[in-house]
Length: 459
Image (cartoon, rainbow, N blue to C red; front, side, top):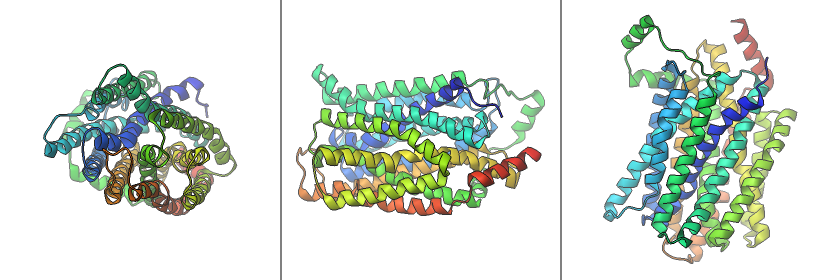
C-alpha cells in the first residue's frame, strides 16, 4: 500500500489545529470567563456548559447521517467543513463577549451562543474525522496520520491555552477594558480556527474527490425521507457492536477526566499556586512543549506494544502520579512542573491514539456488517466529547460552588482551595481508572485488525 506523503499528512493535520483551538479554548476558559468576567455563578456557568453539551450530543448523529450522504462536485466531506467553520469562528467571538444584560438573561445568552458553537463545531468535526478514513486503511499509516494530527493538535492546544491570558494582558496594557480584551481574544482565536480548517479542505481534494449525483441518483435520493427515528435507529445499531461499547465507555471516562483537569488548571495555577497571569502563561507554554515532546514517545510505545496497552500504561502512571500529588499537597516550582507533566500524561495521549481507534471501528463494521458508515461511526467521538465536556464542566461547576469559590475574590477560602485541588487530582482520576478498565476490555488489536482488513479486501 502506498505510504502517505509528508504533504498529505501535514494537509490533514492542519484542521486539527482549528479543532484544538476551538475545543480547548471553550473547555479551558469558558468557565473562567463566565465566572470572573461575565458575572455568572459557578453553578449557572456549569449548567450553561452542560446545556451546550446536550445539544452537541443531539447534533452528532444528525451530522454523521448527513455527512455520509453528501454528494457534491466538491466531494463528500469538505463542503461541510468549510460551511460550518465560518459561523464557528463568529460564535467564539460572541461567546467571549461580556453583555450588559439583566442577570437572569445572561445564562440564556451564553447558552444560546454555546449551542451555536457546538452546532458548528460538530458540523465541521464529523466530516473532518471521516475524511481521515478516506486517506488510508492501513493500520500503521492511520496511526502516523493521527500523530501528525496530534502535532497540530498540540500546537492548537498551546495557542488556546497560552494566548488568552497573554493576549488579554497585552490588550489591557494597550488600553482596552477587561471585557474588550476577552472579546478580541475570542474573535482572534475564532479566525485562527476557521482558517486552518479551510486549509485542510483546500488541500484534500485528492482524498475527497468530486462525487456529484447523477440525475437519476438525485431523483432517488429525494425519495429517501429524512427521519430522526431512522437516524437514531442506525446509531443504536452501531452502539451495539461490542468494540463500540467499550470504546465509548473508555472515551467518555477519559474525556470527563480531560475536561475537569483542563478546565480546572487555570484555577489551580492562579489560586492554589499563586501564579500571576504571565507566570501561568509560561507554565502553559511549557506544558504544550512537553505535550509535543510526548508525541514520539507515544509513537514508539505503540510500535513496540499496541494502542490499547500504551493507553493503559500511560493512565496507570497518571493515576499514581495524581494520587501522589494530592497526598503531598505541596506548592512551588517543582510541584507545578510535576503537575504539568502529569496533565500531559493523563490528558494528551487520548488525542494521539483514540481517533485512529475510531477509524478501526469503521473497518470492523464493514467486515462484520457490510456497511460503510464512517460519518455515523465517527460521530460517536463527537458525541462522547459533547457528553464528557458537559458532564465534566457541570461537575466542576458544582464542586466550585460547594467549595465556596468566589469569582470576585483574589484570595479564596481554604475550603475553596481544597476543592480546586480535588477537582484536578483525585476526582478526575476516578474516571481515568474507569477508562483504563474499559480499554482493557476493548477487543481490537493490531493482529485482528489485519484479519478484518483481509476480509474486507476479499469481499
